[in-house]
Image (cartoon, rainbow, N blue to C red; front, side, top):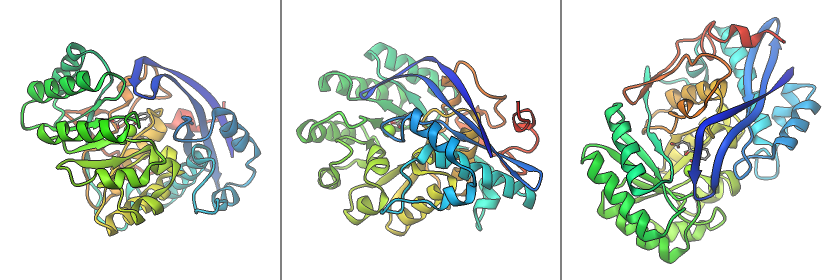
Length: 346
Ligand SMILES: O=C(O)CCC(=O)c1ccccc1C(=O)O
Ligand SMILES: [Mg+2]
């Protein structure tokens, strides 16, 4: 196994209530299965994963991929999810290639989607900038849109949400993501606004640790989706507390594609939906996430339209977004031969 660092700037920063994301620094991971090279990616994002330093040290200390994948903490989750993601994805890619199957087909025993619907992501911005981004997304063929909220005064955010609904029209599915910015009173008020505007869910209205608070916010006519809480407290407590209508499943934060599918199945058993999204990953992890989404039994629009946020990437995207959907690469593995240059050790 080996890993190689990369550093990618965003085209323009993604503004959220939890700060701006300006660049994504991570590691390309390679494993060798009897001469078949599998590719993975570890792109840590504090708040969802371990730090860059911890990720780097974990990868450097990993001699044997299998034993690193077997290490878990007391809750059955990884304390180094980004490092684990890179290794789990690389092993799965290699095994899928050996089996001659796409990663999605390798991960699933059910039917595989040929395309996956994705949501456009609209960052924090003025009302005008928000409307402009909304129109651009709708013109581009997106039928689902996620708006970042929580960075501004709630009244301004309410105006932004109204303007988005007006600009998008009735046929577009809308979501909002507060990244944990609100207290219970503000969240209650904003959920009522979102419900009135027929948003399907509000993501992470309260702090990640406030599982009970989220449980109490449900049932107001708009869904509660949990993202940071899933990374921080884990799926078991969220599902046991009936704290969410939707789990926002980021393979990078959950420790790998197989872990993510497992979380989605657990959710499904309890009647909770799963949406697969990235942490604005580079192309290897992003395509991995596309395969995870394609392997899910039921599919909502996923947060996978994040490649265009990067100014640069590790390779050409074999699964570009077209008209609000992503075509799932046929394989074998992540994307057939498209990543062959990345498989060679530099
Ligand atoms: O879900 C999406 O539309 C894109 C991904 C996204 O919003 C995101 C990207 C990086 C870090 C955090 C988040 C988030 O969902 O909060
Ligand atoms: Mg989120």
